[in-house]
Amino acid sequence: MELRTFKAPRADIHLIEGGSGPDLLFLHGAGGIDASNPFLLALADKYHVYAPLLPGFGESEESTCIRTMLDFTLHTLDVMMGLGLDKPIVVGHSMGGMIASEMAAIVPNDIDKLCLISSAGLWLDDYPIPDIFATMPYELPELMFHDPVAGAAMMTAGADFSDPTFLTAFLIQNARQLGMAGKILFPIPERGLSERLYRVKAKTVLVWGESDKLVGIPYAQAFKQAIAGSELVTIPEAGHMVMVEQTAATISAIGKLA
Image (tube, rainbow, N blue to C red; front, side):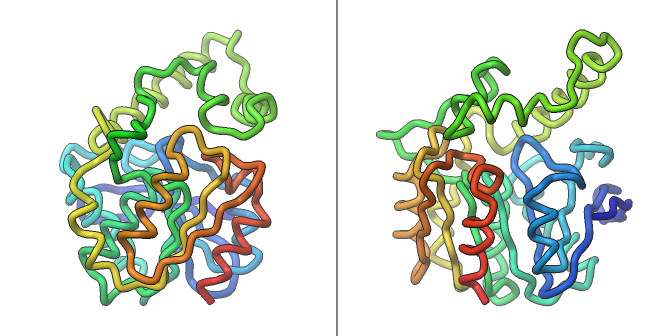
């Protein structure tokens, strides 16, 4: 996978690109993504993957112009059009699924294949989503993974928190990312999407880890009810980071869009 700068109307962002096959646009979650991500590498075996980093994530510049859910959605549509992608497969994880859903609702004739992985965007009073902005770092593996021990090891791989230089850079980057994500996820990850999902025409596959403690299975069922003809694939021994814990099963589910 290669990392390059892409100039969008509202921000110069970094774009991860690689692989061969049908075009696939991947939208990351609040934790961001990098070119060494094993899920992206596995996707690139079957698809030509485009994974834009939102402003404030990775080395993408920050943008004060992107403030609302509509701004996020239009920015990502600008990227899709700027790349010359004609009806790519659109895959979004968590916050990225929220953006992908909005795109498919706003321009239903431009997106005909949609995969939402543990997608945010809805709110169910009976199943409140934990506040990730009030969660301590050591608490995240329990929320994000079916196997929190293995998840913690993945999250901290290569990290040396005893190095002041590394720690400072980490904290700054984390603040940039959460500051951007908070615009649509804080105080709750809901911006009226439920009122627009009826507009989605895309063939839609929903992928959920059976052990998701962040955005649980009731949310998967709510998306399935709201998007006509959508198919729900639940994957055992996987949590919110289902595409990392069960990569092959997740890619197999995406393949249902072929």
